[in-house]
Length: 581
Image (cartoon, rainbow, N blue to C red; front, side, top):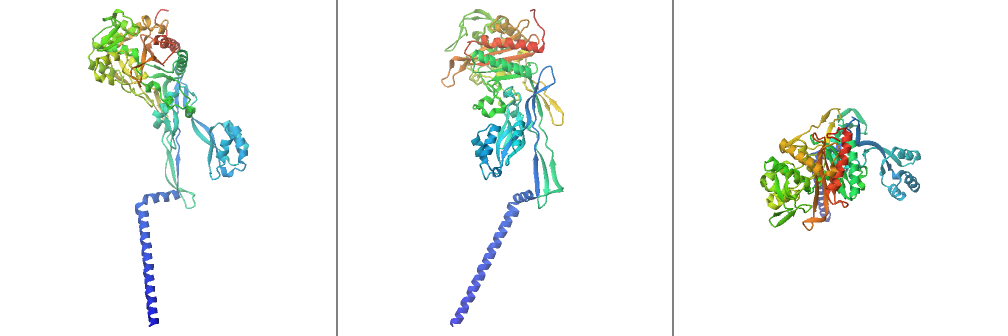
C-alpha cells in the first residue's frame, strides 16, 4: 500500500510539473506574441527607421549662406557687410594626449588662452571630442599644425564674418545660435533668415551588412540650394559719413545716444541708417545689454515734439481751414480747460501768420490750427501720415507709434498732439511722414533692400512703392515752402547751406516720466527733420539726440549737424548751387 501511494504521489507530482511547464510555455508564447504585435504594429515606423539606419547612409549637405552688400553712388563695386569666411577650429581627442600639462602650456601661448582652461578641457579622459577654440586664423592654425601634437586636431569651419565691424551693425544684425542651429538674429540677418540660409540638400545611400556603400543602391538625393545674396540701398560713403557725424555730435553735446537717417524722399530708399552706441557683430556675445542689438530708428518710439508741427499745419491747409498767411493772436499761452500751455520761449508775439508759427515754433499756433479741425478728421490724417503704423522696412524688431491718447477725444490731448506731445512715433516713421512734403504729398514705403541675387544668377529688384496720397500736391508744396522759411528766417537758421535752399524743422521734446507721471524737468530729446536741396529734393534727413547736456534747444545742436551733413551730400552728389552765392 505504501509503495502504491508513493507511485501515485510521484505520478501526480509529474503531471503538476508538466502543467507548470505548459503554463510557462504559454506565458512565454503570449509574451512573444505581444512583443511581435508591439514591434510590427505599434512601433512599426520606429523599427523600420532603425533598420534603415543600419543599412543606409544619410548625409545632409549644407547650402552656402547668402551674403549682404552695400555699394556707393559712383561705382558698381560691392562692399561686403556680411560674408562667409573659411577659418579653422581646434579640437582635442583627450584619450590620445599623453603629457597634458606640456600640451596645455604650448597651446596657451599660441591660442592666447589660459593654460589652466586648456588643461581642464583636454583632461576629460572619457570625452572623445572637445572643442578648444573656434574661428582660428590660418596663421594660428599653421603654428599648431607645425607643433605636431598627437591628440590635437584642426578642422575647417565656415564662419559668418562682418568686415565692416561696427559699420551699419544695427542694420545687418548677426548670425547667432538657437539651440544647435545657426540662425540670423536682428537686422537683415534676422528679417531675411529664410532667404539667406538657403535650402538643405541630402544624399541617401543604401549600405550592405558590413557598412559599405552599394553603388546601385542610391535611393534619393537633392543638391543644396544656396541662399540669396542681398544688396542694400545703403550707400557705403553716406553710411560712414552719417555714423561719424552722429558720434561726433553725441560727444560734442553730451547726449547719451542718437539716430541719424538719410532717405531718398521720392523712392523711400534708405541711404543711411545710423545709431550710436552700436556694436561689432563679430563679437556680439560680449555685449551685456541685449537692447543694443535693436535698431533704435525703427524700434525706439518717442514723443517727437515740434517736428510734428508741419504735419498739423498740413492737415489744416489740406482741409481748407487755414493757409500760409492765415493769422491768429498769439498771447503767449493757450487755455485748455484747467490747463495752461505756453510757447517754449514764454513770449507773446501778437498777430502771427501760419508761416511764422513754424518759423518761431509757436505751440499756441498749432493749438489754434487743431481747434479749427474736426477731431475725427485730425485723427484720420495722422493715421494716413503713418504715425501709428509699421513702415514695413525690412529689419527685425520694428515698433509702431501710438495715437491712443486721441481716442479719448479730449480737447487737451488734441491740443498737445498738435505740437508733438502725448503721441509717439519712431524716428523712421517721423522722417517718412515729413518726406511727404518733398514728394508731392505721397507717402512712400521705406525700403533698405535694393536687390536679391539668387543662386542661379537671376535677380529681383525692389521697386519703389507708394503707400497712399496723404495730402494734395499743392498742400505738400505749400508746407515745403513754409519749412524753407524756417531755415531762412526762423529758429533753424543754423541749418542754412550757402547757395542752396533747404526745408527743415527743429524739435525739442520733453521726455515722459514713466514712474511719476508728467515729464522730466531737465531731460529733452532734440530732433531735426529736413530735405532738399529745393526745388528738387534729393535726400531727406532726420537727426535725433537723446538727452544732450551741453545745449538746451535743437536749433543749437541738430540744426548745425544738418548743415554740415547736407553740404557733404551736395558735394558727394555734385549738385550745382540753386541760389546766388
